[in-house]
Image (cartoon, rainbow, N blue to C red; front, top):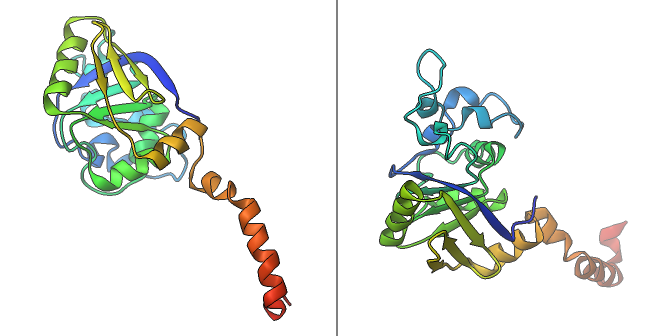
Length: 202
């Protein structure tokens, strides 16, 4: 998993609430267990018209937001089914951070496990950021170490992340990687247990 420390990047305002996982990555793209090439299906029903051409009205198809690595959305982002393809599609497109007033629980966990930083800010802060991104330079500076979001007007908005999730992102460790950090303790336990219960290891 790629480490996340600081990201100064294009940010896109997605003015939609309760974006569910079928909108993030529609069912027809779930024919693979691979994480690769899912970015083409991200928000497919909004990004493309029925003839397959891009819909220029969708925010990620607009030139100023096309290279977005940060999404700022309305509340309850990621609701619906628990498909892990949703964070995979976001990552494959290039999205590394999401900012919203709230996220659905299962999506919240899946996103962090795949290396996406989710930031919960107050409704008024999210609305202010969207306004700034629409009328000014569409970039944000997300600093996980400082736990702050800085807009191009100089305004700074602090956020909080669970310490364990923050540590995992900063070090680029998924759950297996976090477990492997305990390898010395695991080995010491096994050695002691082998002495205590040798018949288990025969």
